[in-house]
Length: 421
Image (cartoon, rainbow, N blue to C red; front, side, top):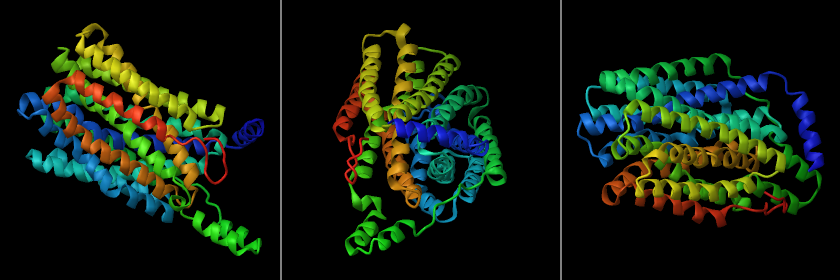
C-alpha cells in the first residue's frame, strides 16, 4: 500500500493541466448526453396530466433513449479502441444534437420517441469513450478520484434536467422543454470536436513481445488468452452483473422520484424538481467521495460492497416513507436514496477499465454501459406497471432486494494474480 501511495503521489506531481482539462471536457460531454437521455423522465408528469398517458405508456418514451444507447454502446467503444476518443465523442454528440433538433420539431409523440431513440444512440459515444479518456490521462493512484468526478456527469445531468425541464414543460409544453437539451448537447459536440485530445497509448505488441522474449510456448499462449479479458477470468462478467442489479434502484429513483413527490405526496412541480435536482447533486459529490476512498484503500470492490448494502437500506427507507405517509420526511428520503444509489457507478467503471486494459477498455466499458442501459430501459415501463398495480411503497421494496442479490457477486480477488479487489 505504501509503494502504491508513493507511486501515485509521484505520478500526480507530473500530471500537469491537460489531464484535468480533458476530464472537464469528458464530464461536460456526458452531462450533455445525460440531459438529452433523461429529459423524457421529467416530462412524465406533463405527459400524464396533459396528454393523458399512463405511467407505463410514458415509461416507453422514457425508455427510448436508453434503448438507443444499448444499440450502440459497444460499437462506439470498439471504435474508440481503434481510432481514439476525440472523433468518437464529437461525432456521437453531433448525432445527438441533430436528433434533439428533430424531437423539438416533431409533431407527434411517436416521432418524438424515435428521435429520442436516435439521440440516445449518439449520446452513447460519451459514455463509451469518456471512461477511456479518463483512464488514459490519469495514473492508477488518481483514477478513483478522476473517474468519480467523471461519473458525476450522470447525477449532474439528471439534476439539471430535473430543475429545468419541468418548469419549461409547464410553461410552454413539450417543444419549449426540448429547446434546452438541444442547445446543451450542441455546445458539447462543438467543444469535443475542437478541444478533446486522445491520451497516449502503449505499444500494441508489448504484451506479446514480453511473452515471446521468455521463449516459452506456454507463456505465449497465456499472453494470447489474456488479450481478451473476458476469456481469462469471470471478473468482468461479475462486475457487469453487479452493475445491472445496482442500476435498477438508481433508475427507479431518478425516473419516479419526481412523479412520486407530485402525485403521491402532493408537492408542486417546481419544488419537487428542485428537491430531485439537489438530490442528484448530492449524489454527484458522493461519487467523488467513494472514488477518493477507493484510491486511499487501494480497492474498488471493497467500497462497492458497502455501497450495495446501503443502497438496499435507503430503498427500504423510501418504501417506509411512502407506506407510513411520512410526507415531511420525503425530501430527506429522496436525497439519501439518490445519493447512495448512484455511488457505485464510478467504482465499477474504474475497475472494468483497469481489468480490461487499454486495448479492451472501450469495448468493456461499452459492454458495462450496455448491460446497465438494458436494465434501465426495462426499469421505466416495468416499474411503471408495478407502481400502477401495487403502489410506490411495494415497488420501492422490490428494488431494495436487488442490491442484496448483488452483494455475493462482487469480486474479492483477481483470479490471475490473487490481488485484493
